[in-house]
Amino acid sequence: MTLTLSTYLDTLEHNVPPEHIGHGLRALWWAGKNDWTEAHEIVQAHEGEPDSDWVHAWLHRREGDNANARYWYRRARRTMHHGSLDDEWRAIVTALIAGSGY
Image (cartoon, rainbow, N blue to C red):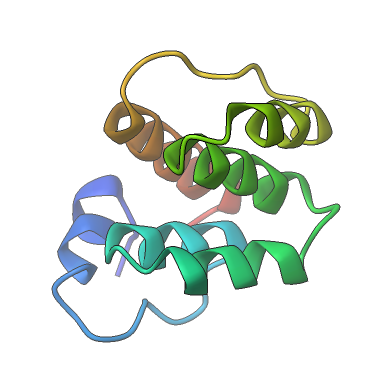
């Protein structure tokens, strides 16, 4: 199966994330299931990896901790998004899928 944003969104109906996806996509999957704790544990375990740091930034933005979010955006070498959280979630998913060769 080719992974696209649409097929990724479909997997949110399942109880476990798709196999063989990167840490950033796995964390975003859990965030998409409203499990902030699981998502945060994944990115914390992979600090220093740009994809995980980007998702880490988004997670802190989602919880309203913009100071911490800015720190993680800098570590990920990304600009802090100022649009909706949902739009950014989709943009990160799309970018990580495109960069992963799925």
